[in-house]
Image (tube, rainbow, N blue to C red):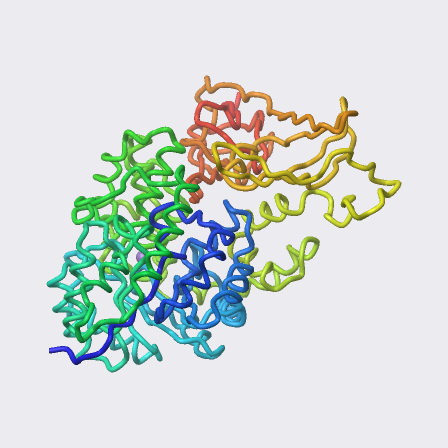
Length: 614
Ligand code: MN
């Protein structure tokens, strides 16, 4: 039986809570007003960084994620800050070189992260070596983590072995990461009991409520002696998120595990987030409430909302069921990887492609190819040879620690970013997400440096004509406020002088294809015009290369006049955060290229024209 000890609770609202329920869109400005109250609850830690929040901050919110740690720390001096780190993948989707890992962890801790929950999607602990070492070196606490999953090759004895190894690697605590909410209450009782016997460091349970088991699972885990459990505030809890803290606190009230939290304070925090959540209505997943299918499909919280978003982007939301059916098949082909980032994205996107193209593995993402090569580490079970052959041919799989193959990356990032910033944190962001970070700077700084812009305090210089209208606005659309700012002045063009403006929030995606022109008129009003791109020719010939799905062209691999062979890669298109190679179906000569890198493209457009040799 467990001893009398108050359960420790970590709050996940500011990271996993909104990551699961509103696609990671919660802004720092919506965290700060309530931060002081969260700090008073008595949580063992607040998880407020890492996972998808880093990417989402730069990609969608145009916020500097490093700034979030510093801002929150000012309002939350008492409670330790925790982050989720994907081992060698950091907060991204591929393996980064050791020097990036080390600098990232150094800066995360220096900015205020106290505890790092470190995992690898394949439970290949070679991929945790560098990050655990770095976290300990820079004074962080390490929660060595294994991903809980159910498959023919996973069992409790194996998980206990993993926990022992994590303890040997220097972990200050062990986390059971049940990212999909698959851990049943009785399985938890058995597993936690065994873990408590096998290791001496605290055990921390992270479980999702997708199948509505998480409250019971926490309770049985507490009975079995677990030390810390994860919860979220009720208004951002349940469903694909975590068990509500108020429920756990109330169940334990007066008993030997009572954490003695103030329920009135928790109610105030819940009220706050209930209101705030309304602002993010458009990011709510269509799959809310209890999803018993999680037990069949093993889809983690974040993945369900991502699949929904991806399919909506592809205008194929009605095919969700087919994709959910395809996911376990792809997983089996891939050797039963736990479905957690980046494996959840790799498996999810490949399953989506298999369904949308109507031909399994016809289009294979670069990430799938890399996984099948062994670049993510060792899969839990052998992978389907036919699929591997299709993706990588006769190439021999990689058997070493994948990061051993990577040359240092920091110097190159520094060099590539030097025109824009020499700030170490910006360089790290760039090393992890080069395109997204470049776009972030383009959007937030504009094509002309801010310093060149006339501000209200500044006398207009002779080079830059004064704007007759103010340069910043708050525009309300359906109750949501968007911050609009005129960011820079371009070269004069026919019909006026373009002003580059950037728009806060989701309108970003709308203006991505085209430059907005803002022309101040004599009355001081601003006239906004949206420039467009001429429509690309529609696909008609055999040699017309098209994208299998809407996305952005990230690389063009051919030039006009090149000779190509059927199957050669012509373009690389990024869709759903994954890159896919687009091949030519015929051999011939490149006659025309209709797109540029960075352009958004659709399946019915001809991107490159290839004609057979005469
Ligand atoms: Mn989670």
